[in-house]
Image (cartoon, rainbow, N blue to C red; front, side, top):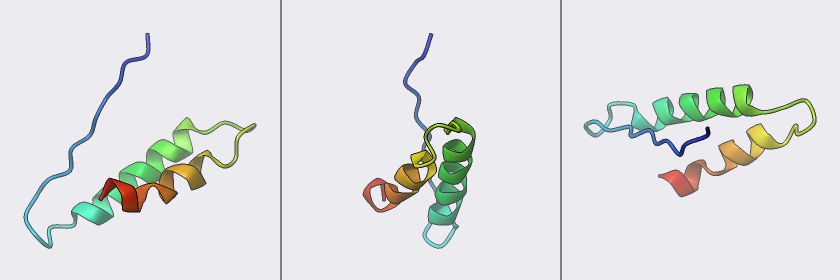
Length: 52
């Protein structure tokens, strides 16, 4: 059973939210990708500006 999940990164200005979110996205893109689809990481990381 796959379920939709969310991660909320919150904190004060200058606390490192953007950097932390990029690390999390890179991790999930890496572990979620497969050998057949090498563009998964690129697609997830390219969505960073949209997520902000």
